[in-house]
Image 1 (cartoon, rainbow, N blue to C red):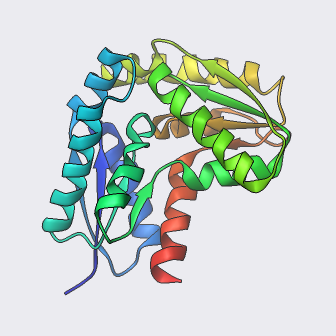
Image 2: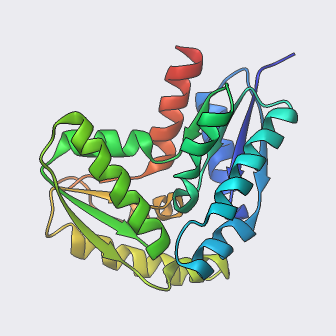
Length: 218
């Protein structure tokens, strides 16, 4: 049997992106996707990641393994901290979407912009970046920026509105920092619109799959 990799999403809009990345970075792997939009909706409603949602994410990771997955990735940064809980329970590779991006960002610059479309994503991403910088012994200043309403737009299918809002936010933030981190995987879609020759803009999907490939394929 072929080895199997599972993605856990909180929105179906990310499935095509990660399906394509898996084809590129995980040759020889079967892939399947699990989506539960209530995980992000409940987190937004509560304003933070609740213990109940952490338990449910851990349960989905376990179900993915029972369904045949040899390794799992949680693709939503808002629920990303649940990965640590899952790692404490299960003995197989569990990846958090934004870890590789955070490690890259803190080594690139001393002033890092952090762009998000949800407060519930911005806060855990900032926490991850601060922890990553501390472990690396790096003195980094983080400049957060929120495009409120853009996430709801993309969920409702208003992709052009989302893309315009995120593009404007990123272009403004790039004038203030040396590198920008996009806190949500859904923001990666706007990069072709932006000139990143002077200020790099990091997104999590590609970097995350590169990390998976390194870990699983060597």
